[in-house]
Image (cartoon, rainbow, N blue to C red; front, side, top):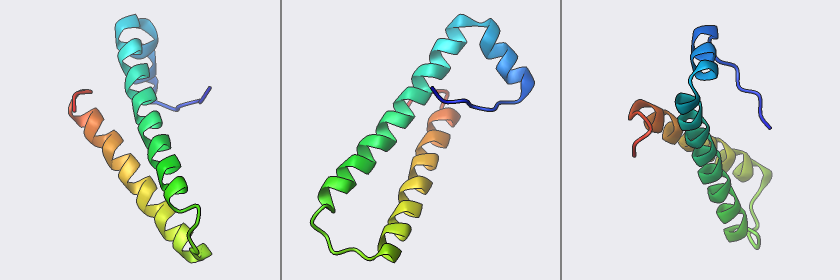
Length: 81
């Protein structure tokens, strides 16, 4: 389980509204799942690679930035892609 810090009014609203809580949980689960699938796919693709540590750090930054971008886009669209 992950702890997510939210502004108190948002957390309270999510806590009180089971439908909203379910929508938020599904959105977070999908975002995490998508990011992990992408990471695992890249890991598999790069398993025989001769990447340097610097290459790995650069890829890590790209993947994290794109994962956050997807999460922001998903949240901005109201949970619809």
